[in-house]
Length: 285
Image (cartoon, rainbow, N blue to C red; front, side, top):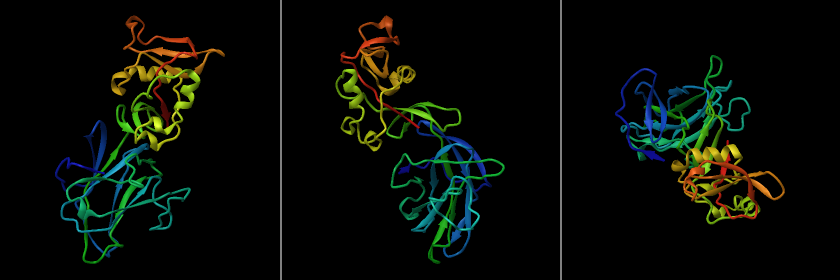
């Protein structure tokens, strides 16, 4: 995934700057504009700004000629054995992402696993553990040079396209949140049919189909969708929760676009399960 260049690289010591990246706030970690000679053991390390999940982007200077730069993400810091890299290491997992820098000169490139733009890592950063991103030139041909620039640590934010849908709620530490599907399920459903429809991947767009844990929202979660109904484009009148109030009734909520504007936002526990209402699935992390 590539992004347009946000700014020309400035040769500075390690520093952190908040900048905008789409709808999210990102922290740019700058390193000296190093040129690493292929075949050497020279490297550059960028520390994570804080203990929380981040998507990671690297800026590729235009003069880099490395065709297989191996960026490594160490969410829990470096391992005891220098150079070790294993994604299954229980203590200090490492994720290695190859990058042909000649294909993206002067651009921001996201580090991903299996080309998934939702890739993120839960970094730890404290006086004892330093989660970071590194790159080393030892695997490169001696004729190649690896120029390094800034790294962006992009934290999740409300309204961001995220893990198959739209992020509508986020914990203070950024580790937990609620995601609404990108659109309502097609048509309307009775309560029992709605519980089955959220499990059918055919009811989702391409991003939503990447995840299989969609469900009906709780009462509180549906109200969160209501609070962000313009953001998520929820334009139906009545929506199901997944919460029963009796054998024949369930919780529902009236949205702004109903025929009863005075009751917009009203939640009721007396929605007949045989009724045909709209569905906006959610998933959480």
